[in-house]
Length: 485
View: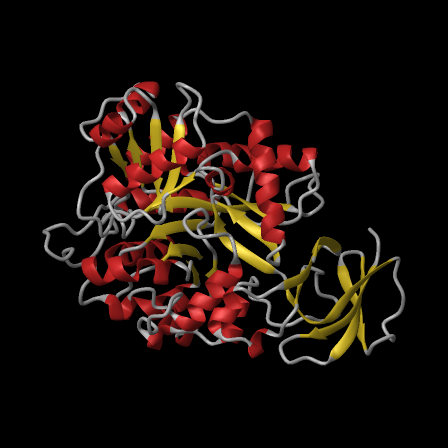
């Protein structure tokens, strides 16, 4: 592995100007300008700030890379408007006859009308159309798309398990095409300072990433999450969470074992103690304790750490109870609504709160409507931080962009537009938000793994809005420059 010299960088927030020499993938020296020695490769940091490399702890990588090529529907204000956006896109970019039309990013939690297959049939008669919600928990299909996967459905709007199984049955591009899309998406992530992702794709991630690494060097490390249906396969392979996959040069590791307790806020399937406003529904319990705990116990006994999806407050209680009963540590993914008495339990049980702060400004309006009266304990990052809980930030891409600076800015400001902060008591300090986006790393020192980012501006000098658009000068992963502006 070649050596690298980073010249003229300020080490850490408000740090002093230094040179940093890297050897063998680790930091070998930090000294004043011109005093750290020489190297075969030199990168000038132009006085930028050197920080630990950024980590996105929740990505659906193949879906994110594909979503970057789908019709964007994030601006849709109704089902009818969604159809208009699809038609406008196809007018500008006609699809070949019979080709599956794919759109992504709609949020129907505040719509005045309901999506239905007949709307798509009327607009595009006989054409297969598949539209994904922003949270990936709803799939809206036309009659032709339903026929394509051999299904019948009264509305064409599939939720939760139906959505995910139907998604897996839709036609997909060949592996080499998807791998090319993934490579492009990872390069874009590296350009924002990302040095590691945790891939929650509902697939055999271990096999997929071994294939991708064999084809092309990766700009990021990847933790390969084990899907529920692959538990026995992972056990037969001898996989244990945290293990480095053989032949990957340390870039691929086995991730946690993923389980779902409930659904999502936007589909009103997050499982809550109270009723959703104006309804008698508590949401959807996907995996009751009697099924959840045996799976967690089996995984834990074989060295696989559980990662439990829980969004509603009742779902989070069930997940925490399961961790207590099984007696293992792990992580809860999302933790968007918590009972006050459950906040400290994360720390007591050693459970990581793996959260996605960009969801908070995205979902504040739908939370105000459907979680009315509960929002003081929604997206409670400040409370979790004050309770000493380990927080780790992700994007849930494609639900939000794969950009940790978006998460950091949202966690610090609790807004992403001109409106005042939403429940500012749940904001986090910048230093804590940076650590949550850096795998817990809080500093850069000699001996550290050389997963690093250089920002053109010191983050402490920026407003929260400025943080979201901070320019990145360079990214280094395992001592190798993966991005330079």
